[in-house]
Length: 220
Image 1 (cartoon, helix red, strand yellow):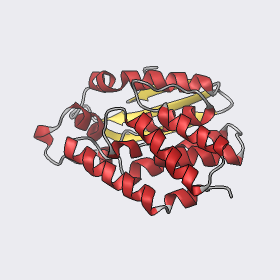
Image 2 (tube, one colour):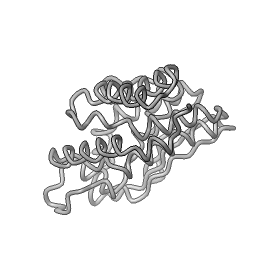
Image 3 (cartoon, rainbow, N blue to C red):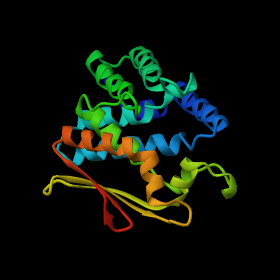
Image 4 (cartoon, helix red, strand yellow):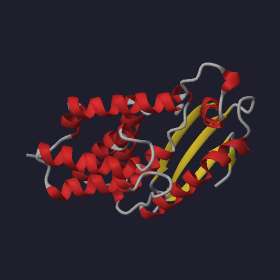
């Protein structure tokens, strides 16, 4: 039996882990990592592969990896990619997913976190791009502007965020509109430079060039 994205989305076990993981991150002061984030990652990762002509099966694996990629946070933020990959292995194997598909999903999950990320396959590359470009005001939980940390400021300042792929030009571009009253452009680079370099590496794995445009200026 093929395990589908819809089956994964509807799994009460998986949904419980995502919910509890986000509760832990909220307590630690992190931005939103709940269903809005993981659903966006699932959809964007799959859409990248759609536009590049990967088959429907690879697209489905990207959706599953995107939806499950942060479940390891239920254990601890530290090493959550590796923990999440082990959890995903157990869950998907128990659901009856074929070993090759399990391997593709857990490889992508295990290689998505900043310090250990690497685009080892197309699903992993698409997940990195989807995850690292999810910058938006609605991810900020803190309602007190005076107590914003730099992560809050950067996400809250993002008034518009758009990831667009141009297959003919061979580019994938993150376009941001940042309100500099909340965050200087350099603040964005302080937090996200490593992530943007990961995006460049992931794009290269998919034979694309990653570009970053902030407030109309091409910075990468």
